[in-house]
Length: 487
Image (cartoon, rainbow, N blue to C red; front, side, top):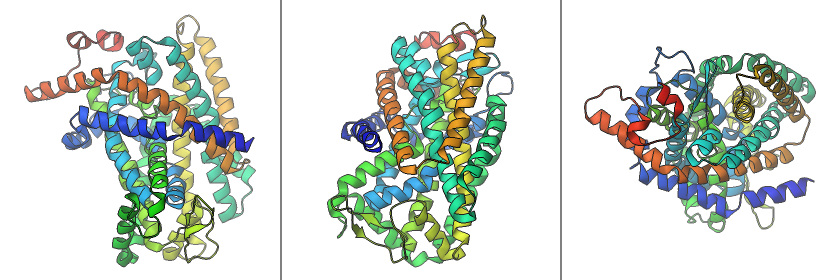
């Protein structure tokens, strides 16, 4: 079974998908004239601006924090180590490239989510399923995406993170995995029962704190090993373009692992972040598009880079030879085997001493993974609501029952993850992310005209002296944007 799952995952994450991600990122970067650079200051300014006049939805910063919760997770610790271990240091440069270009993709998909969002009680719902149906008038594809997202985000992705928590605490604190599984599942239940309001408030408090604390810790490690930092960056650059004296033959692996782990980590193009972006209350879709573009920078260029340089500067990593399974580069650290969380623990242990590195990583992983799992629940719930909300007013009780069932399934998946081997779970998660990315990237490319048109509208209003641009879909000829027409 494991071999079959791995085979399917390899088919999904083939070179065509890697190429599609790169082409899409380039297309949106050039199509928006590198909005991620031109409006960088606007991205930061809009983070903390909130329209308190609107009753529904959550603030831009809460949407940013919740999206960042999904982006900053085990991929920033475990995923980065795997990228280096299987693709060499050069994989990190490709993670940077896909993040920089992917910020344009993140802008486009978040903007589309805002255009086609809907009012659902006192909440705002949206995302790929909504803009596929309203923008492309393709209900069957929207339903397909929604079904995949519900399955992936409720049953495939949560176990990855609960597994990381359970295995880490088992190794470090000798706590039985099932005990951690029950503890994490209970905490998740307490949060998700409160709905999007409680999830966004927890994310708003926890996510920025955990990201900043981890980056500071990495900076301290680098300061202690400052002499090795230039060599670490040199290895990344040479490895990325095939000029490394040892790793020149695995440039293909560097690109593939960098792009795959980059997309998995920052979620640009995957189709999950726009689900959160739609929940923000703003008076022009471009505003939340800019905010979501900035979250990609925070995830990859800050948090992932902090992990990568820490591993390279302390030389706590191995690079696996894809041809033989042996090591092209082997760390001097004793018993540092296959790529994974042990690399990051070993790097921190050079500063904190044996034992403390594992403790710090276990606690960090807990917060990173916990907040990511919260985000996954919101993704799953929103798409489940899409599938069953056509007659929401007539059948509100049915919707409550369906959501209750989802919560049971979701919490059970979190518990299951603490008991299952990580390799199978990672393959399932990767495959799910790939399927979502295939659909979403093609869709946002087909709807790119709307993204470009609305960006021009926003910029035109700003140049005309309007400090707070407003969005009017009728003036731009955009159909099926009922929420904004009502506004």
